[in-house]
Length: 352
Ligand code: ATP
Ligand code: MG
Ligand code: MG
Image 1 (cartoon, protein in one colour):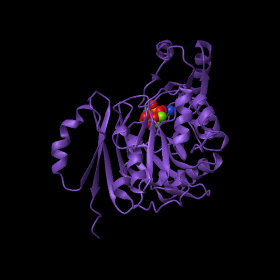
Image 2: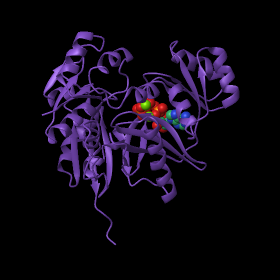
Image 3: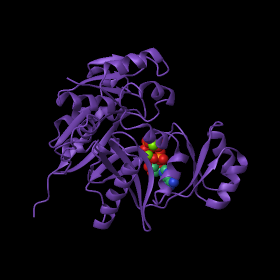
């Protein structure tokens, strides 16, 4: 049997490992932390830091193909892994998605709409960027941000200085504020043979920068739905991508605006676990293992709700609910803002 190597041991790694196991694969995670969600369900665990070159080599020896569940893999680790075993998705997808400035430039070169943006390394860049982009604007660190961390809203010139201080000296990007009606995402997949399959777009609601719910079907016209899927396909093809990708979109009167891409399975794709024959986790495993992509057609309406921090108190009640599928990540400690699990509520199909 083949062994799938997964860099990272969080909940996404956990759900990938479960999907891999169902297809008869073994999994081996590489994750510096000990008691992590993926470690409970994978066959092997290299518990070493990402700069341990010998451990990375041994990991590559132990597996047949390497994938990852987060995009901040150090380039130095890839330098070691790539010559030894296939890394899917490839380096180009990481290069583009690790840096918001590179990402925005890539997307607009593809002809896709993004928020207006400008690189900000120092105060002068910020003043110049604000004069071009106007207010409100958002200053974001170029690297390492997630769940809205590393972002500062700028509503007036008087707020610029404080926003720049929030960046703590890290290279940043200034984005114009997109006046969207709602947010959607496309979870797309591309196989080793170049075939592309996208799940039905989901509609996302964020609270305090963290994804709260994803609902399918999303409120989209037929044209918007087609546009969303086609642009995801364009991105996948351009990157010669293998695996599942999340593409976050703003819906505006002027069309779809791409917010960001994630080169991995995505929180807004968790609904596929109850809404599709083949969910995003199996789809990703199929792609990286060189299998044909599976049937991702949607057969149910679903609302996915994240269980964040104290939301765990609701678990006993949810466990009694009809039509509710619980997914808990086995994290030992509840912390505010920490994603502890999610629930997929399957909505009965409308009677006609
Ligand atoms: P994730 O956890 O999705 O990786 P992140 O930290 O990378 O989040 P973004 O997706 O860039 O952050 O932003 C988080 C949310 O903030 C967006 O989903 C959107 O609601 C809002 N937002 C971000 N950028 C803009 C923008 N330019 N205009 C309007 N709203 C924005
Ligand atoms: Mg992000
Ligand atoms: Mg985002």
